[in-house]
Image 1 (tube, rainbow, N blue to C red):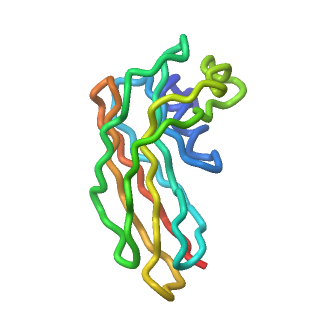
Image 2 (image 1 turned 90 degrees about the vertical axis):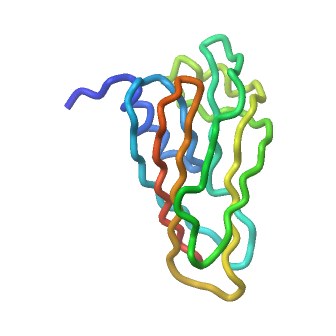
Length: 139
């Protein structure tokens, strides 16, 4: 199976410890990731960033929570973070430059232990919506 550059990036990034979403394709994607968090503690479960090949950034992604978790809350925070491009990415050298990002933080309901779920729509500068589905395991 041959993946276009955008599909290959989305697959590789979905496997990273902190989910990062980068732009390169002109079609929509849906990615599902699993995150393990501690009950009743705020945890960063995702962050979304985009950078150009010269390490500049077109700015913040538009991130919307489309399905809120039933057993907790999501906070979206604008920040500046280091990208998390993999070693084979052309943007790997950009990992030393802080760029605009949107962080998603999850906090479970008090005393909740079990599984939760959230879904996000992310739109980067290319205007293509991407769906990120998050299975949240609360321990």
